[in-house]
Image (cartoon, rainbow, N blue to C red; front, side):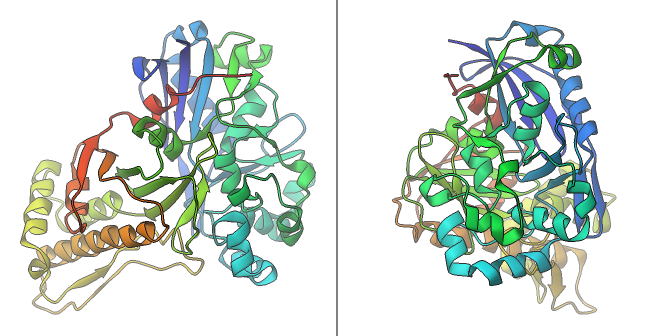
Length: 436
């Protein structure tokens, strides 16, 4: 069994781990990097992210030099343009970015909503489908892209700096909005022409477990790795978690934390405009995904605004108490659960309270937030069931230590069994076997 270096790069941090199959032999401390927020823009300095990767690897105290191969799991989309040497010409624009709403409408008007979904599996959601970001730069900051030699997502950027390769995998390709996702059929020239993108700048597409390149001498020195170590193409972090869950058609995987992601594995994708449909990244399978963009992040915002005197533990107890009481605890107050917008909407929705009166209390408001989020969680199940894939009754669950997932599932209809999968992204990388 090969020993792997796993790199788990999420929305705010990097973890490096040594893996033998699904067993984590060693893991680095979490290394954080900053996302810069400016209005609707959310991006990460690409050099800062590389430094975080280097620091995470250093946290393994030399063990990374002893591995047989390297596997990558990355947040997505995380769009960036590079020059001929692999240096970033733009920041890494993350999935939280919403600057390209107007551009997204224009893309859909030109290509047609039904055709776009038929080709890519999704509508061109701002930030969530990165063709909108590329088109935004072509329109608003074209000078930045004049020296572009390669455009892709985070795993493409990492490979360019680690191995010199120009690659991505099907899961990341799906989120570009330029890939024939439903046919796993390569880049689509019509979609590229629609935004004015040169398809020659796009990376080659390889399955997640393929050895896409080997650590260069320069990268070995920069990242404290062994020159020549094979690096697999890698995949989206949610796909790695699904691999740990089994990745059988019908498997549900629920990740509940700052965001709440519910993914259904299928071999027969049936796109819906309220879901994200993308390739798993391996084995000709797909994920249909319903995402709530702000769950724990919204609730802990409420703690800071209204319950600041409570400890985290006391606040969690209060959430469970109110959730058990049900909608009556909210009184007349209701809540739209879109504090971070909506991943499956072009025109962005916003969170908000309704029904407030002078008699409303902070408990009413927190209860309303919980009820809004619980209802949104349950509403995804009929959408996934309508895909035609028979859903298995056992749901794999990953999340934080606050057990918030138990609250979110309160109103799920049907009989479900839940099994916890810990360290899902990192251990999911351990299921990959590198192949030439």
